[in-house]
Length: 569
Image (cartoon, rainbow, N blue to C red):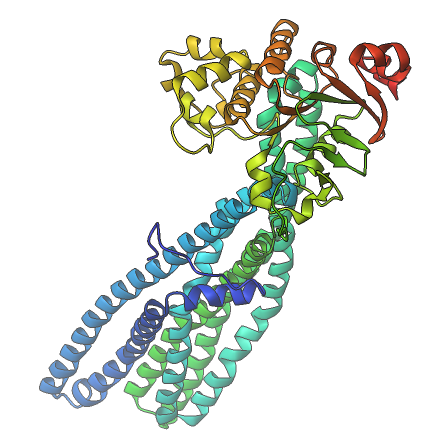
């Protein structure tokens, strides 16, 4: 199986079928071994009725006990060897499936890392969760076709060849009947792909909603909207359940036909063979052999149907994985270096300019508009934004990331101790003095002091063992500790009480003195400490000035900061 640190390779993302074939090609030796073991196992299953027929015709019927003993011993030896083959086949196929499972996990995780901050902008959390929870297992199960699937084909041809030596009529019936059974099941497999695809898509949407509810349940409860959202979730889950029933209905038909049709076919062939034996065209031993051959064929046919079922579901899952792997991060076509000295960031779309060395606040009745401006200035979305007059698209992306930090108020917090959480992805160790200064500037020193082990205290994923306000201050601490040349912060104080917010506003300006900082906010406590306030209406710059100037000159701004949003609009 693939090692935890081994390169999983470059997946084939041209389609679901090609992705499954890539998983097979990544482990050629194991795949061939699985096919050989599966084929040998099924062929030897067909050898059992042959040996039994010989024991009857050459030993039991003429009374030759030595021949009977010899054929019986051969039957025992073949059965024992086949049992060992079955164990090895199962072990090999388990490794094939596990390799496909882990390899898919690695390429999906690698893609998530490659997308980075673009991940949440390109796909929903529910899509990734659905891939990790269900699709990976389904894809691995589809590789069952490599072993038993190939073995079923070989066993089918072997049994047909053996039947030719008994009766060409029976051989013709088997050769034509078995494919007819597979054809009958085919339409159900096509329908299964459609219903399964719709079910998986609905499941992804609902999974994303679960994640959103888990993160915002406290806010919903405080606003009194918990019951409303719960009712909507209940309706969506009922629709998903109904779609699941449709998938189950098709699946039940596939599985029922996979067992029922081969059994019915066995009865027809046995009746024909009995007629031939009664007419003296075949011997009693050959009659037993025919029954055994056809009984053996029930297994391959069931495997074919099962493999078809697994492949149908596997292709649906593989298409979801391929769709995710096709996502591309923001293209880096930059060839120019970042400005060597503090310079102006400008967004032509909104008219916003962030002057170097100043604390700039962006205010709007629609927070999404100001957040979109910062997204463009941090080059997380395509735009015509410039830095020192140079289009951001022409500057090397890694240099932009080195100089410009986008601090989202809902940025992820990974599990670890507090020291690791506030350090984030920073290089090297964090000095106690720098950590203390960042905590103080974000008014988060009381968080570290209140935890049992200070900076060494464990923090849960997304800091769920902290309150919403504490999480926001920890995020701000992390941004300040990074000490970027340009800090763009989205609503850094939205979850804080007035007293804490006022302290953050004062300390943030002091900590970032002489450094370029832009924040989006409508809080008068923060706006009052900004060097420049940019007031946006419908995503466009409407006025510029200090907080006091805009309060005097702009009625819309005055209504906005007074929390009268309806007047502001």
